[in-house]
Length: 218
Picture 1: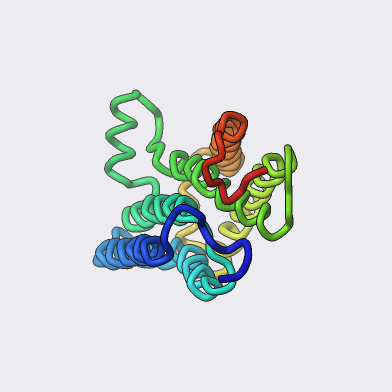
Picture 2: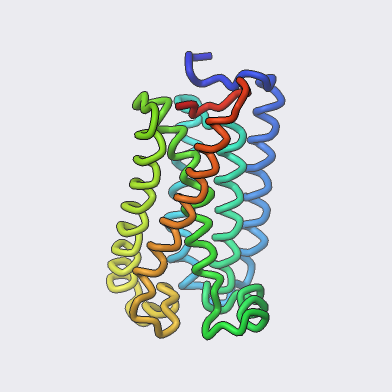
């Protein structure tokens, strides 16, 4: 195996079974939720970027393999996203439960998923930057957070363009604004906060680690 692509401490067959299991889980879960989504056209729009991302991971698997931890984090985010796409983010039942329990004025599920985007995907982003770009030290913590912030803003722009060009009548449903004119800014802030939290925890663990494997060691 090429240098930098292996994961010390975990046998290759075991790692590949785990990663294959994650892909199978997502495929089955996604297929189940593809059956009679709340709004089929919104579901199609929501899944464009997600499926493109999964396809990219599969196509580049032989050239670059993330750690098992990163694949678990990615699969966790995709699972949350699949739920949001099935119900539309503003109508997810779990979000209504949280809304009632906390006496909120809106369904918070979309905000939770944006937070999860930063919290769950910033670590794979750091791993990718460390192993391919050779980042070290504080740069290896700052740039992944910066990348998540930039991506969040870019995705908000892409979503708005897609909504206008593909299906203008679904704009509010697809974007999940729920009448909040500051929804995009709050979504970006949520992702930023999630990324900051994960990188802070990663930094603390890195400072105190005793030699355990970290594919994104700085």
